[in-house]
Length: 231
Image (cartoon, rainbow, N blue to C red; front, side, top):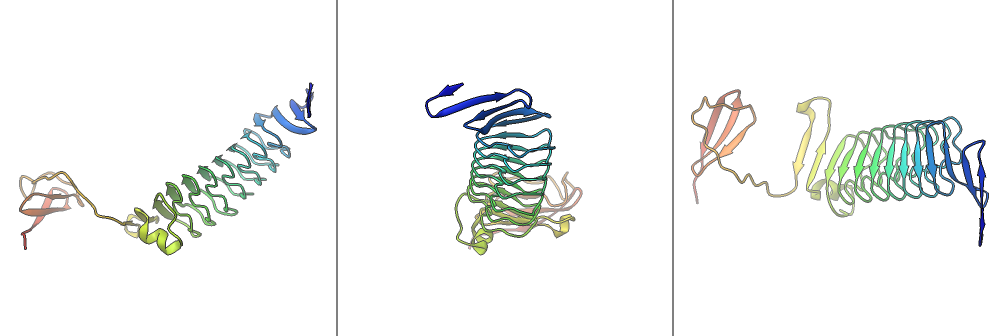
């Protein structure tokens, strides 16, 4: 097929369609590549999807990846099980696996980290580590370490700002006691509750309040309370 300024050819042997001598569609080995240069270097990778100009273009051996958006996962070569949805999402990832980036430029700087999850434009933009989770526009933008958690909706200037001003900032650990969640805002528990007695049903860590007391469940079905008053 030909058109003004465009020359389209089908290469049926390899299941490819070329536009002006550049691969624009490729189907084979359980892969689907759509877009100029999408998946163009793939040789042995299987079960991959690349949609968008230069999406997944450098992959050679990577398997089970999904890249949708121009330049999404463009530099991936051997990384597996990554998902990149958005312009330049995970664009610099090469060999690492298990990352999820949803949003333009999400996880865009990642090169070596694994199992990160970034949802939102520019979420975890600077990330280099592993096992981070960020939700929201610019969430965790300056984070470069590992095991961090952010909920945020704007640029906070630097790493200190990310941690001190994001609505939620946390640290993951292998044990519950080692984990930490910081709430950067007023916590409002809108529903009051009065346990029927000190032995009322409850789980350690439950907190309740009424007009006279704050109640804390310190062990299964064991409540303690402290009186509150105006001043």
